[in-house]
Image 1 (cartoon, helix red, strand yellow):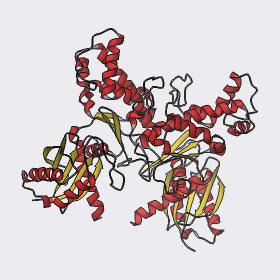
Image 2: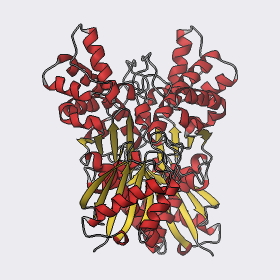
Image 3: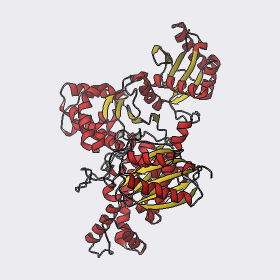
Image 4: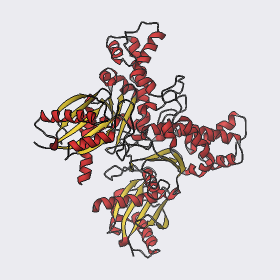
Length: 318
Length: 318
């Protein structure tokens, strides 16, 4: 069997493993429920799952030349990992177990926020673009920023923390960071749902049946159905996001903004509004920046992990 | 004679040429009044001046292994230069003339805003720092942003245009860019002088004798003399600058901010206030960023031009 590459995305409930050619073509994918990754039992559940994924494509563990693991915790430039809150994880033990199982593979650890950005650059909507910002809108708002083809890593773990750009100095509510008026207070899933419910309340309208604090699906459905409060709430979100993007452009001047994360599902419905808001606030030269949806969805981190491992391997053999 | 390197900084009134060792030690400097750089007469005034600079250090034109020219106009990634407003300049002709005069030298063109940043990284206050922002405060406000040891070049010539970060959404006056409330409206030399005069007027105080629209020297002198309006104006400047820096940190998370440009002369008098304002607005993790004065003064661009030429040479011989 020819050389293959693995990209592993470790989430709180499941591990997604992707099998790739070295050119970035995806051959297959397998989900494994996330075990406690602290001892041999947990590690062998992962390696066993990987072996079965490989088996399905006539590949063996020794065919793997690179294996990237995306970890939901800060990864320092030297590859060391801080402990994480959402997953029971011994990163060193996991890496050791992967290396034992795949003798020929270069193993790399990647931060999960960055992995998706790198994935989009390798085989997604940012393919061939050297200056872009991937904005992930989920419970919070984060970004991966690529300049000159390189991910900006920053000094104190705050690169791409665009959810904490101040967009409303009049805000009285506090953000989780202890400051007030952060982008994340409006443009996250939580923010969108809150803006919607507040708009309904202020206008004395009964809102659509929102299921939970991040249920943007219901808000986007209401928008499609012509709900005026949903339209106003989403416009407010676009105002703040477009404004923040205008500030980002004055710093790193990207050619492309990608919108990813859970909220990207509603992208088509708010893209025209977002583009208009960005144009309104951006410095003239920057208005040419494109705003598009990320294209790899929840596979992005898997792609990115695989790619980072390949890059590490190339650097090693150069 | 051993190998030497030249760094040439082309300004509107004079050309500064610096002679360096390949390690970045400055051997000498020479000023040449800026001629019209459009024909052989102008070009030979430059090469003649360079020959005399070299002669003073027992070096000849053939000893120059790299020569960088910083040009007051946008330089594209391929080295091509757009025309400039403040200097009569044929960049291609100048480069050709330099190459003719120095057969062994790699000639490089650098944008002047970037040259100072690169100079500070090579031999100035940012030496050894891979993530920093060099803020140049003069008539306007611009920045050179370095991430992972590389200058961010951006897509539409707007990287580092931090003077156009919006810091005051209530502003009614227009910035030169056509927008309102830009950092440059407050934190530039023009902005400082205007804030001072406005504060005096609002408080019915006769201002110190400001000589012209960018005479910050008089404002800083008044500050030293205990002028309360100067203190308030400078504090206002620090508020806006610290606020903008807090936003920048959420994007590229630098370890160090350097303050350069004409206003840097007053740095000692406003640094404590600026640090306090930054701390007040910055995301927690970013508060560790240092704020210091740039150290190469008006030699920075000369250093940076020399360094860029060396880098280009290294890339060529690799």
